[in-house]
Length: 131
Image (tube, rainbow, N blue to C red; front, side, top):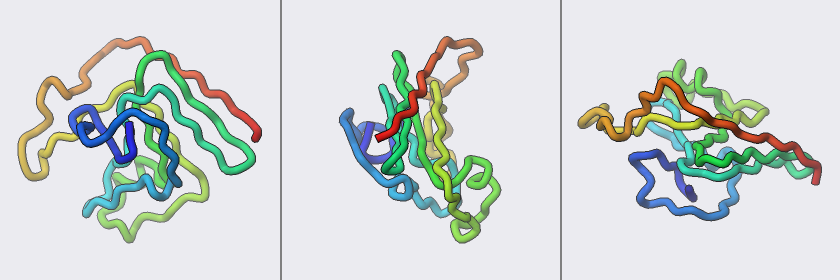
């Protein structure tokens, strides 16, 4: 879903469609660096650099995040100015994520938006291509 970031409990302002964006444009600058820019309920995602690319697709909807930062870098940094952009694209493909909630200024994530599955079946295909 797009064109903005979306999560299981934060997607009402997004819609299904085909969107195009630069990876740097997908980053959301929060006051404290944290996971961001995920796209919930996707069927596929395509990344390309002009000459080469890849498609990730699954039968079940998934979430993806494309970033110039790793999740570990976002967790380590206390301030945005501490982040250093990578020369590579970091792609995260997730079967499911917890909802966002608003625990920093309100309630924790409600049970219906928690991902507590212990077992699940998920397959994703990654297909490289040359333009």
